[in-house]
Image (cartoon, rainbow, N blue to C red):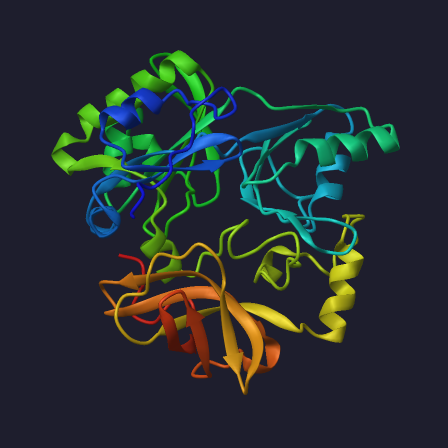
Length: 376
């Protein structure tokens, strides 16, 4: 007896976005749940979406990237306590990855931080709660801050033609925005932040839409202006992100991993004189040496099956790690994957047996981004 794939019941627990009606009219095929919101995962098909992203331009509904706003006289103090990255020199208009850790250096979230005003910061979070963590710290220390989730819904424009499309809608000045900088720009007389950032290796922008009604109108304007650029709906693509070596929180990295194990060392200001929570624990781990680390792997054989649970990595009859994301790469003509492995086995070329849901294969440690999978 065969059964249809179960559906997820739609309710107010799963919040729509300003772009949901447009996304569904565009023929979205699949969703996942991210921060209690719907995040599209497929439109034409996984490989079709991948090729389109690499050659053209896509509009992504990423409103699930919620903003935790910290505002007030003690905003700078709390923001710096929350991240192990030294942000003391961040000026207004700068953004950047800012890992949030607990006292043991374990990763709570890996957000992008935006300094939106002298006394105001946004943590644009991945799929876990930060507002309650920040609120608890502020209350325990008696800090003079307001912590909230503003009604801001990011819309991403990604792909090699993103510059051209954005210039059609926001003007030529958008081309001058530097990587990980954001500027206020106007759409129909309304100001919203536009950042050169996004969760792909193909380049693009994220628009922090702060007006629900204008969100749909902006989506329509981008779609109309993008016809000559072969614009289409899109979403973070599994093939593209694995090729680029982008580990994702909640899948490849969890609360059981430190920021260093997650490969975020360059975003951890370990020798800075800040009072960031988790910083001392990360210093100790650095000095003692890591016991495991996130890695890329190629996997032998035909296309791997769709993955839900981690696949064990075995060397010498002992489990030494796991593969957490895997997919067939049509450009590299092999299976590519991400996961964690014991530090003694991280050298590129190291081979292990991976126990997939379709049987045993050979996994070979690879550098990431995967060789041959360069941007564009």
